[in-house]
Image (cartoon, rainbow, N blue to C red):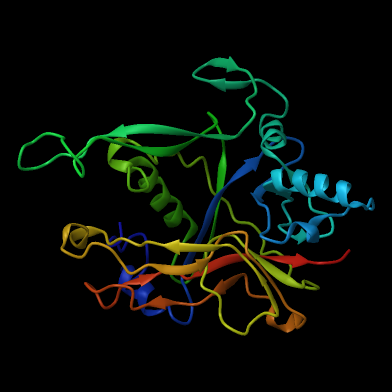
Length: 311
């Protein structure tokens, strides 16, 4: 797909040429989408200290500890279709509350059968793998012993949303949708060859850019490489991007890109200068990540949402 000029005007070469100053296409991470009466997007809880999200008027050491434990379980927030986040009125949810939102309190359908509402929207399962010694054609002692890998499985019928921000002079919505359909049919991720990472694209539509007027910071919808000195207060969890080449370089002697330390999705960047806000994306270009291809890049930009710290 990278070389299909019918998807991107000018092909991937033009995307890389404009990457340093104006990224042509940015994707977010995938998030659950609530289609019930409380329609909205379920995002990762901001990576803030828990006390900054504690709105209870009660005080006392024991009560504070219990409250913070409950907050720690709430790993999700529900954001309305306006895509604005106010830290003083977050709708926090734990896994059980998330499932109730997604199911709207009704039994879930899986393969035509109704199932009880589970306590989590996803589960971790282990799958056995074999590492084959190419000399003997069998498994054996380490490093050729059988091993297991963990995989994440989601609720049947779960709808997830991916935000895409793109330059309309270079990319069109229909072509972005077609690209995602192709990825879904072949599978996404390192285990796509075994049938993992496949999905169906239900549809796509344009949404209005969220209003940044009066915002005090931003929330990142994907990992990014922050620009130094841009914001006053920064809250994030580190994420290491272990990139890998595709196409012919995937089977070369150097198939991997150099790792990049980034701020993970859910990062919060706060500023006292509101003039630094307004762009719907944040980050910077990441180059020089490959010993096999000088032009190789890693996505260092993230789509961002406006954040307010007061009512």
